[in-house]
Every structure is written in structure tokens, then in C-alpha cells.
Image (cartoon, rainbow, N blue to C red; front, side, top):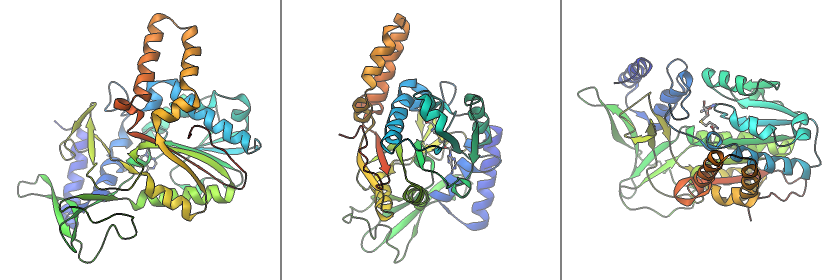
Length: 363
Ligand code: SAH
């Protein structure tokens, strides 16, 4: 049974498709996740046991502390500019930002906190989590100030930005996968011939086998471009953490998560989260165009281990009860092990090269 909000959303999708014809995965995704009234993120807190998925900052404070250490280190390497802009995109419940701000008093005192968030419900959660600080909210880049260096973080944000899917049907034909209504008014995938349009032009990819899918996201590239431009002009550094791959490639990675279980992307529309793998190579290309530095792209497990998550966990364990130690162990396992979030999640560091910076954690 769909929730009342999801039913409204599905009606809006039906109307849109009846009016405009089949819609691309990008259009579908932005309506389902971000429709101002009924979008998945706009009306609910999707995290935790009661929700649909759990993210790294919600697993343990250790995650945010390691991200915080990285940011503080870059800030110190840059000569501790004051003030600076501390920007997080897609802050969820505000947990990551709260954990980052606990790492260093000096860093925290110099930071002007800015959050990029589209969801009013999650905005309220962030306000509660960060009540002790002065926080500025934005829905886009244009209002984020440009008077100071910028330090940035995004965890599981880029995967929530829309993308398009194209399927290869043999030389020279690519088709776009779109969402249409079948004769029973059920949502279904269809393929639309792209004519001479080649979605992989400019990508370093050989032609695939017939039936393979490629995912392209101009929204992710555009967001990266705006951020890279800011880092180039204002100086600064940032970390991007997400599901994804180091090299561009083929594969259908569009997924839906409902109550911690993978479901068909068309089966729980409006009640399930959408995700897909982020093409980090594509983001890196954008950064290179804007002449900012990019670190290696490595697994979350390696990054957290390199920064010192085990040392921090040992320190916390010293004063912990047996039960708390058990929870710490479990969290460490989830955050760093290959079969869990350690490999599938990637970390990429970006930074201006006006100063000679040496980002920690990548070697
Ligand atoms: N970083 C958080 C939450 C990840 S979920 C964590 O790790 O727990 C994705 C977050 O991005 C949510 O806060 C969602 O509301 C926000 N979001 C998704 N698309 C967005 C967009 N286009 N603009 C601004 N925020 C967006």
C-alpha cells in the first residue's frame, strides 16, 4: 500500500506522462525525490531503523570525526584562514556537521556554517542538531557567500542528484530509457531512439555489448562545476563521499531502497529512496577543467583507516562499557569492511593549489 503522499505523487507523475509523454530517469527522479509538496525527501526523515536506509554519520560519530580531522588538517595547512565558509551539501539530520564541529574549537570558532538542503523536514532536524551554532541554509549555490575560503563536504549527496540512462542497441544506435504508462496505467520502462546523439561521446569508453546501459548526469557535473569554480576562486578544500566507481563504465545501477531492502525502482514510487553509483571519474574531469587539484579516489575503508579511525576507536573504547565497546566494534566493521561500506563507498578529495597542500588519508 502506498502512503497518501506517494499516491499524490504517483498521480502527478501520471499527469506529467499523459501530458508530455514518457519521461527520462532524470525527470522521474527529480519529481519523485524533490517534488516541492510530495517528494520523498520533502516530507520525511528517511534515515535509521524506522526509515529506509542508514548513512555513515548515523552509524557512528567516528565517521564525522575522521571527516572533521581531514578538514581541520587542510585548514591548518592553508594557514587557518578566519573566517572561512564550512559548506555541507545534503546534510540529512545534521549529524555529520555536528560531529565535524566537535573536532577542533579553533576550527569551529572560525567557521561560518552553510548548509545546502532542499527538504524542509530535514532542515528542521538540522536546526535541532546544530542548535548551538549560527547556521545559514541555501537551496542552491548562488546565495553561498564568496568572501572567504570554502571547506566542503558531501556524504551520499551526489547519488541523490538525477541522471539519465542510455542503452546500447547496436551501431550507431543508443536509446534512452524512459518511464511510461502501460495500457493498465502501470509505470513501465520504454526505450526511445536517440538518433545521432551519442551519450558516451567525450568519455574514455569503448563501445559496449548490445544491451549495456550507461548513466550520465549533467546535474552532478553542473553541481561539481559550481563547487570547483568556488574552490578555484575562493581557495579551499572538500571531500566527496558516495557509492560509486573510480572509472567511468557501463552498468545499470539505478536502485530503490524501501525499509532497508532493495525493491524494484517502479514498485514503491514516493515511498522508497533512489540511489545510483556516482561516476567519480566524471566528477574528476570537471575539477580538472576548473584547474583544481583532485586526490586519488579510494575506498571509504582505506580512507578512514589512513586517517586513524582505529586509534580513535581504541581511545573511545578505554572509557566504554562492554556494551558500548560492542557497538563500536560493529560500527567500525560497517564503516570500513569490504563487504559493508568499505569498498563500495569512495572518497575523493578536492583542493585549490594556490597553497602547497598535502591531503591526508589518500596514501
Ligand atoms: N549526508 C546525509 C544525508 C544523505 S541523504 C547523511 O550522510 O546522513 C541526501 C540528502 O541530500 C538529504 O538531506 C536530501 O534532502 C538532500 N538533497 C537531495 N537532493 C538535493 C538537492 N537537489 N538539493 C539540496 N539537497 C538535496
